[in-house]
Amino acid sequence: MKRTVNLREMSATSTASPSPQESQTKKIMMDLQQEKKRLRMLQQGSTNVTALPPKHQPINVPANNDSNQQVMVNQRNALQMAHSSCFGYFIPQSSAFGNIILPVIPRVGPNE
Image (cartoon, rainbow, N blue to C red; front, side, top):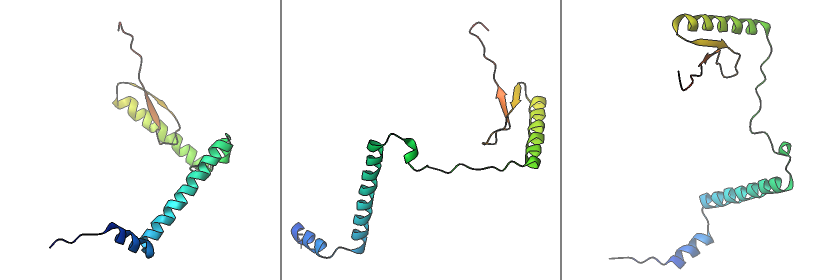
């Protein structure tokens, strides 16, 4: 036996007593709309980039002489190892990403 579902009855019962999940979803959607509106107002009203909050905080690295000397020793060792084991040129560099040395790739002209 098939049972038919009346959409009007369903909508009437769902609007009469919204579930906690539905009310939470509705609240989240309203918060998102307000945030979008606030961001649009910031973009239209101000071309100043400093008005927007920073996406991430910069990392402050303390300047310590012992750690700097250790980095120099590590750079020198890595550079010597690269020169002894590879056919190529490398240059030392200090990097926030941990790249102690970089390979130098020579440019080769079309005739060479």
